[in-house]
Length: 205
Image 1 (cartoon, rainbow, N blue to C red):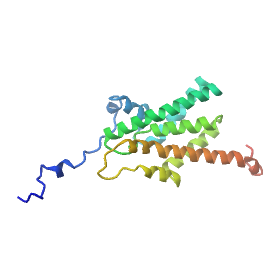
Image 2: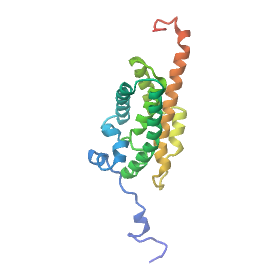
Image 3: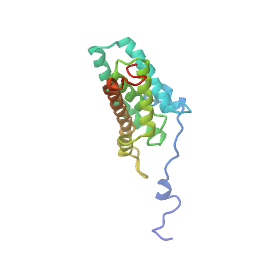
Image 4: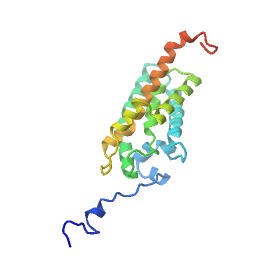
């Protein structure tokens, strides 16, 4: 036999990647990283898990805002939660992506949760209409990935044959934070231009 030709049980067979795993409630409860990455189960939604995860972020923000109120003390709590949560979310996203054998699983929604918390915190105080607009803008930027969001999404993209590592875990979070930044910029522009739009039928409303 030619020594240059690998045998059926040799390295060529070992190089075949394992099949992806499906996210499940059992997997959610098997490790704290999965519970965090799946957004306490919101990422297990069979339809639009990113949207469901963002809705969970919105609901949990309202609960925490009710408990913490507003002002410097609340701002410090939010800064700590999002700051520490980003580090924990990075770890959880990396671990869960490896467990699922998928570099950027749609069921991992801690990225949407952290990013939308950031939007609502920075833009506060917002009424229901303002929060709904923030939700719609964030979902647009996160799903459509225009311009800078697409750049961030591709920055740490998984390459064929590459193992899933910390760079991919960071990539899961990064594009959502860029989507959050784009959302905040649009909201800020809307506030800045509002006096100039008062002549419109809905201006100043």
